[in-house]
Image 1 (tube, rainbow, N blue to C red):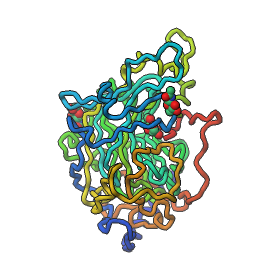
Image 2 (cartoon, protein in one colour):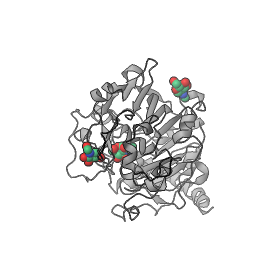
Image 3 (tube, rainbow, N blue to C red):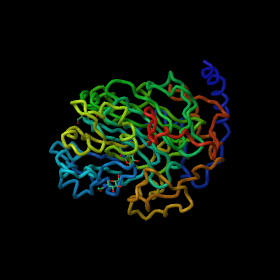
Image 4 (cartoon, rainbow, N blue to C red):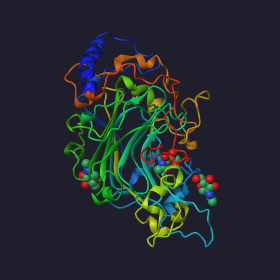
Length: 449
Ligand SMILES: *[C@@H]1O[C@H](CO)[C@@H](O)[C@H](O)[C@H]1NC(C)=O
Ligand SMILES: *[C@@H]1O[C@H](CO)[C@@H](O)[C@H](O)[C@H]1NC(C)=O
Ligand SMILES: *[C@@H]1O[C@H](CO)[C@@H](O)[C@H](O)[C@H]1NC(C)=O
């Protein structure tokens, strides 16, 4: 209620302040237009990850799992030879965990083969539509469809769109950012379940998240529903995530003319003056992977029913990984991932080609050696890619209200949802987010990454 009043009082003030044009930042593309245009914007298909050419747009990651899973990520040729990465005649892409190999008797330390792929292209906005007919389930599995930049975590952002462990719902849609971002959303404006107390900092671990408690958001029920459509709209001012059960998605998606403004409440919403998206999410690639055990699935093991065999005898996560019969449904089936761009917002293809599409072998600027490291998600295969993040973490940048609230026109549910509560912003250098539980495992209800 108090939030509602604050919103009513503050939003008009922010709107007024928009009338004062602010100088654009020097290292931003010159054509950074007002968010107003993105409302009702037309989205144009820019990248189609689909069918027989699907893998051309992705790199296979084959270094050790930074999250310490009992998993061996295979390079592309090995993954294809082992049929862990397959495109069938109808163009459906399947990414599997090895469900055949039995480690030799007595061998404890066994890493099961799986696949982790990353888009060659990096993004600074867009409308991303992923159509899955299956996601990996089963004890010890830790599947994720997510995005991050890879070398400057968390300052360049991470959004986990579909992620969880041991096949247990619900999906937790989670953001991890650098300093100066918190989740403060009007519960009426999202269909997901917001955290019990807000604002919740998004900084570092465990990030800020919303649970998608609709049946079929995750795991076996997701698969029984025939899968689902995960959409994220990422503009300069906000990130929203929608989940639709397979068959229930708006017709405009299947028609190739997506109109997110007509879809109703998103499950997840982040933005406003509590979180200046354009500074906090930079040069992200999409990633799909399935880890086994590791920091989260392994940490949550004892709270799951996976810790016992059918006959009731205890089973460790590592023992589960050794049993190939547990991985028959540990598969992603991807119908397509389509990326749309709008010429009206940061979703637009960047005028600077280096900024929007530098792959790992790209010739973009080298990584900033002064940037913070220690990224648990760091992806060495990408360490030379990308460009300098524009003023990430610059406290001055978060004062730029010109990007904070959409301009004229009636506010959408999403706009109203972003609570205007000046002063709640986490200052750079403020206290880090709550630490994981004492045993080192992340709390069961938070997403570690
Ligand atoms: C299994 O993977 C982990 C990384 O998660 C690595 O540290 C370990 O050495 C690997 N073990 C074997 C036997 O390859
Ligand atoms: C998702 O993919 C399936 C299989 O190709 C297709 O039948 C369905 O129409 C797609 N859904 C959307 C919303 O595009
Ligand atoms: C996927 O990739 C990285 C490293 O493996 C990790 O940080 C992220 O959380 C992973 N999730 C899974 C599902 O492995």
